[in-house]
Length: 130
Image (tube, rainbow, N blue to C red; front, side, top):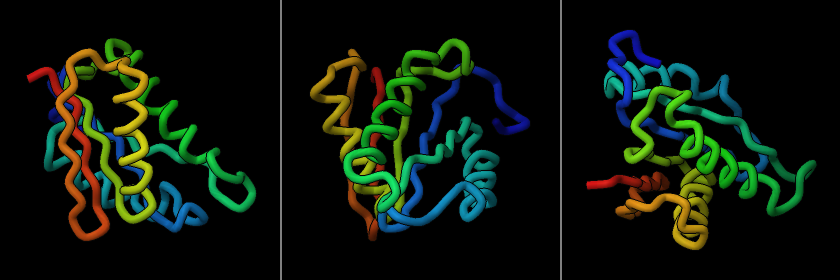
C-alpha cells in the first residue's frame, strides 16, 4: 500500500513470470514497490504454486482464487473492487489471460470491461465499472 493511499482506489494484482516453474516475490519486490508508489494504488503480488512440484493446473487455480478473493474482500482491503487490474509478465501474462477467461466464464464481476493487450510478454486485464 502506498504512503499516499486515499482508500477505495484501484488495485493491481501482478502475476510474476518464470516459465510457470521459477520466480517469486523477492525477484520483483522493488519493481512492485515502484509501481505502488507511482500509481497510488495497492499492488497485490501473490505467490502461486509452481511446476513441476505442482502440476497443471495448480498455478492457474491459485491465480483464479486470488482474483476472486480480492474481489470478494474489496471492503476489507479498502480498495475499489470495480477497478481491479490484473497484469503479468511472461508466464504471468499467460496466467492473466487465464484469469480473464475465468472471470468471463464465472461472471462474478458484474461490471466488467475487458481490455487484454499483449505487449512484449506483458498482459493487462482491467475490470472496471465504467
